[in-house]
Length: 300
Image (cartoon, rainbow, N blue to C red; front, top):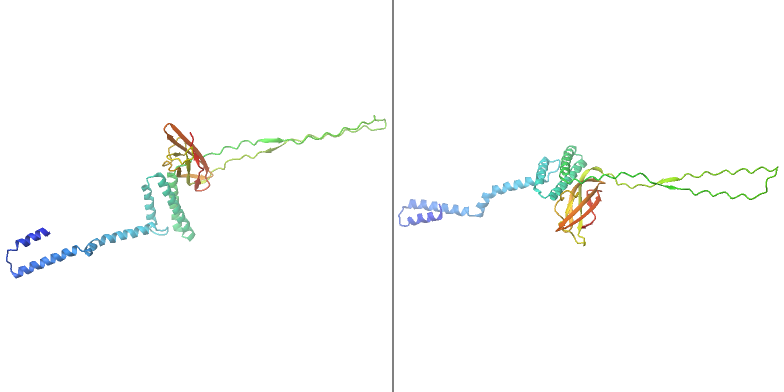
């Protein structure tokens, strides 16, 4: 019953006579309705209505927190892994997705190492399996740096080292012709000429890439011809391919690639300014999971 209808009914009863019993019943109903109306407008009544909803949200939040912090020996660890894997699709940018996967891989490697150190073999084996699955996903989604085969070692060149020529023996002094009683002089034996010796020159070769592919964070700075930081530069793994990700901002680039130890990674830079094409290139060798490239300057 709304206020307008109640006012209309009370107004229609203003000129009517009713007995005391009916008047008491109507008064009791009005008082009850007014009390209920006041209770519905109070904060306690509203809180009582939303209390089940708040309790449900609190339970969901607690379960979510327990799931996302579950360790490898917890029954909720499988749910945590599934939620983290599903969150990969939420990262639309390729570079953000690559960094998220690398971070996820590092967390799972640390979790597996922790379980192995505590002696929990069952949980450690499960964590290692999840780590290997994550590593396969990372390798499949990261750009592959092209393998640069080392050049074959050229044949060793030798430089002949000639020994000094022997000093000829001094000339024999002139003597009188031998008499009948003198013996003829015996000839002096000749020393054979020494054989030239060769010393091989060491050849410097590039180390061969070793180990399995791993995520490598490659970063560096690109500059214009005048030395200023270059914006909008496309970074590529080869001249015929597409950009690795977003163009450079304030000359900085940062990409996650798949590479191996001792592998040489070469990056190519390109930017079109009207009719002028600016280009650059830089190379670096992988030693660990982080590769800081030297600064590169764009040229025409």
